[in-house]
Length: 184
Image (cartoon, rainbow, N blue to C red; front, side, top):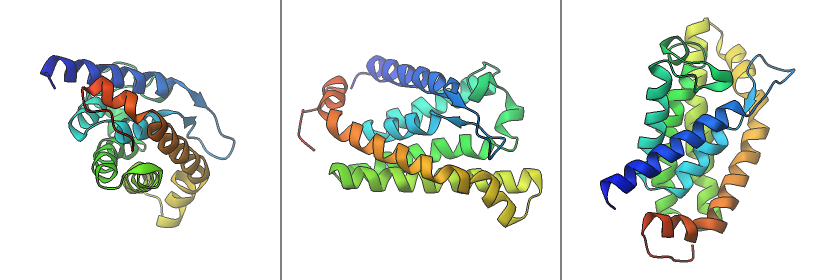
């Protein structure tokens, strides 16, 4: 794929990730809102090759780091990246790579579901949980109850949606990427 096309796709996906951060629903059980960010990260990881997936999420983090209001609820800056929820943001970057690699080795809906669960849920939550615990000085149990448990049911639903969507539309993603259109 030509570099300009790869950069264009990466930039467009980063913009979609920004938009997904603004889709936010406050939850009564937590101070952290439900957003569509993790769904978009899963869609990127499950539909794109690892280089585009990494570049898209990396660009998103860079935009937020330099102060553009791209994170959840229009927040931005290094204070967000290195604050209590920053681990989830860095987890997106590592998680999208894991998803992209795993889905390449495990085709079909089941493979995409496994990739979304491992990369999109386990990896993201691991980094988010760890940073939340360290930054706020929480116990392991308290960090788990605040930063993981309330969100798991919704994220499993997002994983299912992302796996279904990318399986259904993979031929369109392949066409956009200039790859052979195959049934997966």
